[in-house]
Image 1 (cartoon, rainbow, N blue to C red):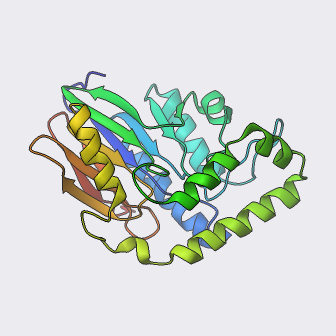
Image 2 (image 1 turned 30 degrees about the vertical axis):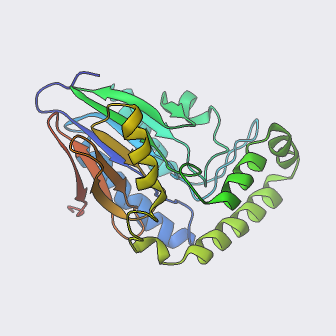
Image 3 (image 1 turned 120 degrees about the vertical axis):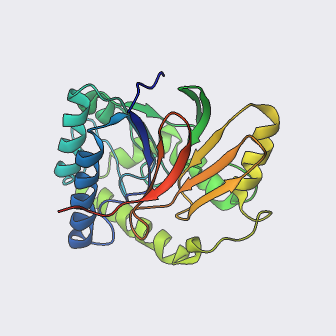
Length: 254
């Protein structure tokens, strides 16, 4: 993807819309709409790197209610010809083709390489990769199993979505604020993973979410690992201007 002069590519993740309650989610959604409306003026593309929603499931004729502001905003951006790339996360891994059809977005289920301008990127949500986290890896295999999805689809949406929201809240409660703490190079499994990948491929920027810790970390002389943080505590995102990619923090302009 070529980048025209003055244009930028934006990366952000982990909105978790729907959590922890409707009021807080609406505030976060309004903030995100302001962000997208401000940034679309010079945007060449947006990469949304997982966990837009705290829970998402697409029945054949039903999707979870709400989120009309952010979806309407993204639809306007897409209609203006600005590409939107969406990665599934661990909270919205049951995404299928709704957003690709309604927003004309490209939806990815695994990390992907991209050439943006003259730089090489490797982008993904970051869940279930690298060493450790074996419990989640087993759960992911179950949740992405076609039989599991088929069985869940037969639950009435009122029951299915309520059940899923309950387990999603338990997952957040278990993590708490631990995600905010840098564990050290050898214990940060995404750093371990990116170091291994950097030996196999030439990458300038590894872009991940999931960790809920806004972070820039050099992997080698060439490669930089960026974790996008989240929009719960940090309001953080990354910007590629054609030369470099750096983390930034959003301040809403009224």
